[in-house]
Length: 192
Image (tube, rainbow, N blue to C red; front, side, top):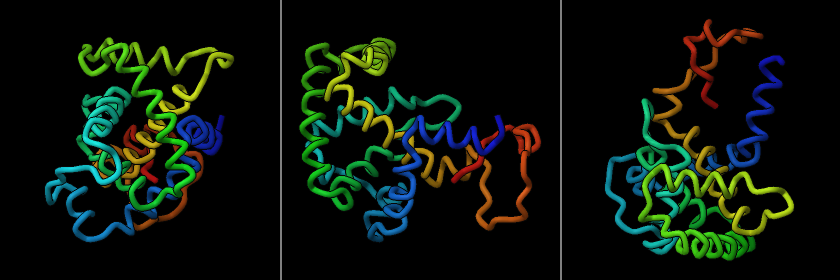
């Protein structure tokens, strides 16, 4: 499998092929004050689209998907705030309504299992169970989780912190070298 096939496969798994251009455009077009707050230069206190309870749940889900390890967690790089801003300023009403309908089902499903009060390993097990449901049993709860997961990964990879500090990053493209091994570029994948 060559590099291009691997990138296509990874993009199809994460959904970033569809979401990355949109999120990159959003990040470039945020207002100055909102952009400064999301970048960590200010303080965000209230989500603009989600209720505080919904925002807390989404933040926990994101941090289970991408926990803090040798790299920052999803909420450390403010993917939760990016998602709130996307829903508030970018997404169309039809998608917002469909997402919220599905998200409320996910919210109810996780509340029955006391998701927020569980240990990190129990939370991970609950989300893995949702993700690995048989195709015949997948429903709107599964769809809501999948939407959150795809957006989390896409926004995470598009953040300045991750792109510059945890991926190979060239702010100004240089010469193109085909079929480069990961070892030749320091063992890091390339930022988008």
